[in-house]
Length: 179
Image 1: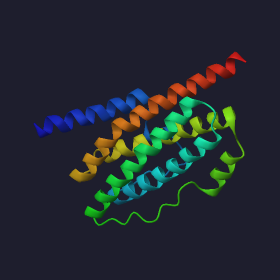
Image 2: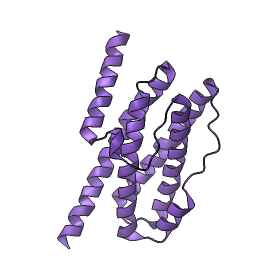
Image 3: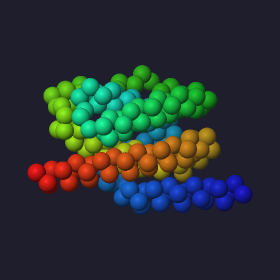
């Protein structure tokens, strides 16, 4: 029964990767975690950046769909961080202090507002979620049962957020063509 469950989970992860077009090589400029500890640290840092950026959306964004997505990402990531901290603690992994959104990115986004901000946010979110999904798919194959279970638990949420971001990005692209 456990093997069947794991096989289904891995098939689901592969399906998510296929459906979203995600492969580790698809998203450049992001280091991939090499082991469970670095996966956990990377997941924590990425979550904090997403939380920080989602907070900017509430003040600078224009589209209600984009604001709703950002709010969902923030809520999901706050809960994921709680779960991740518990996992890291049980594995004696120090998650380090998350830096959050880097100054360059924060400066780039604070110069934008309205629809321009929304488009930039969606572009960043789509790119980041592709890489994050690839990292979680990789971790879903971890030899550590707890890390594997954590990654498999988060993957459906990442997939849904990726789908929403892709839809919003497509909507913004269609608006731009209509002008």
